[in-house]
Picture (cartoon, rainbow, N blue to C red):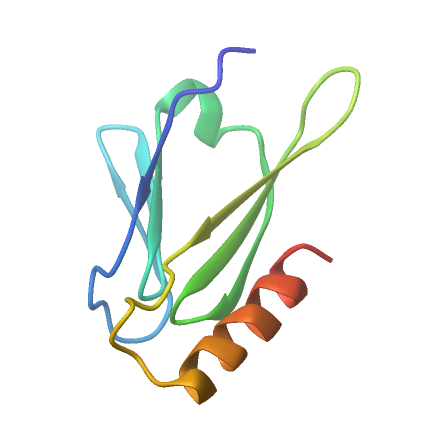
Length: 94
């Protein structure tokens, strides 16, 4: 399987959603992932972790593939926001 994906950061989409256009699947939740038709048929699950993280599980051979798209806070953010981001990252990797 060729894996053709594009990760999107800070798209400002309110809530979680999925759009299909010409076979391309666009998974949105503050961040996003675009999958080509050949890859989108392998989606086994999508988990919105937060408005900064999304986790996508794809059926693969010989094992499944996990994609995580994360948008990190910029350097000017306060320490509390960075701590929340680090906790979100840990959740996304489980």
